[in-house]
Image 1 (cartoon, rainbow, N blue to C red):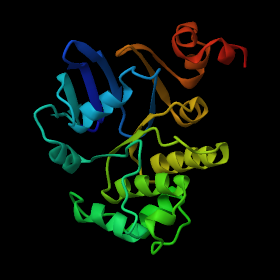
Image 2 (tube, rainbow, N blue to C red):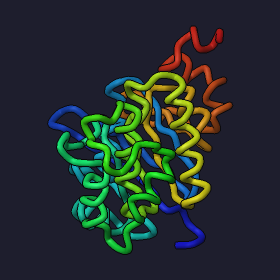
Image 3 (cartoon, helix red, strand yellow):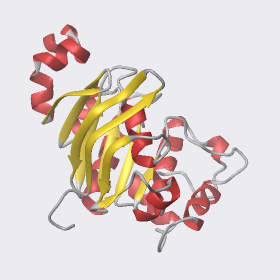
Amino acid sequence: MADGPLLRIEDLTVAFGAVTAVDAVGFDVPARGTIGLIGPNGAGKTTLLNAISGFVRAAGSIAFDGRELLDRSPVARARLGIARTFQQPRMFGDQTLLDHLRVAADHAPGDALAPAGAVEAVGLAAPLDAPCRELSAHEQTLAEIARALVQRPRLLLLDEPAAGLVPTEVAELRVAIGRLTAELELAVLLIDHDMDLVLQASDTVHVLDFGKRIFAGTPEEVRSSQLVIDAYLGTDWEAA
């Protein structure tokens, strides 16, 4: 679908018993660039990523390059070109960085990106033979993104990659995200509570509250929206 969005979400709803975590959400993700997703804790952000990945049951529609995803397994979705990271990097301490990346390469749907290329793409300076247990939190975050990139995804889902990072590391992460969309020509759907990261890295930002999408716009429009300030950013942000 060269002329349409890479990902189209329509009327997406996820419920856990009587609790509706994602409530009739819909938006498009273009084939290139970064889309931000923000909202308070419990707003449904990670649940939405889980629905896209196939980890939770959902109603509505999620179409990837024109193909409906809801009837496909997580593995089938990954083979179509969807990769993601998690809030806690999933590493084994005895593995080297190269081992960590090779596991992903072995499961790539097509020709895998070379581990050295993935590491370079995210700006990770650690050597490939470094034990994962010796990587800093920032290096582990970059290694998780590199692991996803090895599979050559068309859509990369990032779930709170800035968690636990200091401001200088967040700034490096922002540069890395921009480099990925520019050089690898992929789409990124970014969730994070670091507003500077999301608003500086994203082309468009969607705001969730209590499972509903309450606002969407450019970072500048999000910054100035009284609705978003009241629901999430707070008056301190407005005064900043």
